[in-house]
Length: 346
Image 1 (tube, helix red, strand yellow):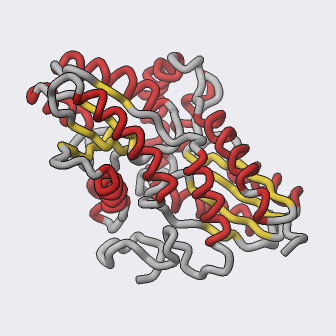
Image 2 (spheres, one colour):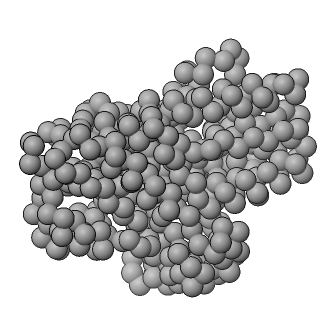
Image 3 (cartoon, one colour):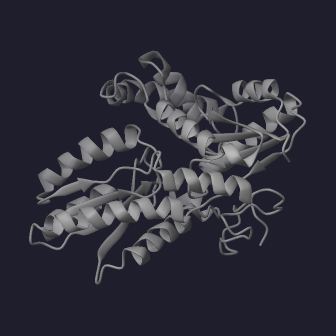
């Protein structure tokens, strides 16, 4: 339609924009029923305790980044690149940024959408792999706001894209180059695909996230085509005393140290730089690698505004048109039937 006004909404976790915002950001995160599955007021109490106890430590992390999260800036850069890449999809195209736990939040974005008066709205997760703790919670809230503010246009939402070429190919190029550099040490490098972790109970309830992370890593390994590649998947950012999926990134770095091999670490579930890459991977894990005797530690960048990734998002926007099951880039469910939390029917 030549008169179409296309709105694309990209969304991510969000992050505090000042030291004072750290505690309320953490409260919003842990007060989410998809994060802590407890009834109110118990969840409110737990979220209050956790946000109070973690605030100062988190402020220290964000202080390394200028006192605030860089994720919004990263996402705005991606949105600007996507707006340019998607210009040919409609007569008028605008990309909006939505953050789940801090500004711009769902009610703010929905107000901007209403003012734009779109004829089509596409919602794209900046989470390549689907999880109830990321995509479901964000989309549910956005849908609720669309109804509350009477947007009047349906939201076309992409589920996931764990093996999309535009996501995998930049990672493959970066791994290949780093693997060659690390091999120059004379020792066989180990490639670690690091993803944000989840509690084991979340996966046990049928969340397909871990399976999709495995698909992403396997797709990258297949495209690398390096004979007898030494690689592993690991999970970072554990919180609290509950059991989390593993192995942990810390454990894999320590194992590499015991084996005396270089580490090439690829963030396999992140598309933007933020506190978990710039502080946790670049500082904490790098220090652990040195202490563990890892001879070389190379942390690869995320895809950010790589033209192939942005082009993939634009392509998925067009792909969604008229699809009833917008799962991955296939239009069909990709998750095995045992993953009951997959939003697509089997």
